[in-house]
Image (cartoon, rainbow, N blue to C red):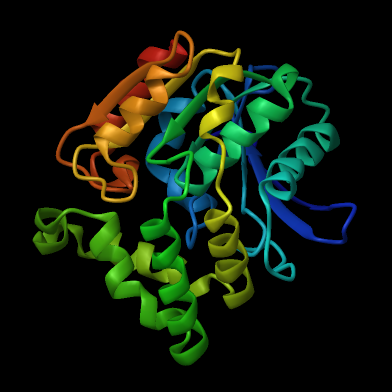
Length: 271
């Protein structure tokens, strides 16, 4: 990890977005976007591989990590706009983009609305639509959030994010503790803002508009972005590629970091 810098950008609506950059000066840029209820630390397992040949921009999505909890609900124009604002601030004309779950959806919205800003897109463990059952999950979670606080959501969230085998392995205690801590650090407004945003998810019909190379990645056991759902997204995206991370659930980059990193390394031609 080289040339690590941190900063804060205040967007036009007054939201402070926390970010960091690392990697060699002058290298091609890649932007990394986190999932709901995590922060930019979710990408720690991939940073060593990426910074060898990329300048990496990581940021905390609004309402997450060290970024401000703007008033909910959020929408994808805001979330993708935050990325554009960061890229403009750092004078990044065009970059590769990799996002997981919420971050993957943000990447789709960004590449659809601003096709000139994204050279390659990796959309991980994300979907492009919100069927009624999916919307209902967020209604239930928001109700529990209001009644019991963010901590009450961590156990069921971890059960969706990781396979039963990973959760049961004592070797993963520290990793799970850190992920649980990211959940607990998420502001209530940030969680609700994103959850309401996810209920409005309606990007499936726009996927044929994507013009940059796209790689869809999902975990073999991901309940939120199942393999058939992700395959269908790939099928309507011209020239897209699709890869499954074996023995992983929703946070596939953390559950199987070596397998995940090999997959993205091939797509990005990492050195």
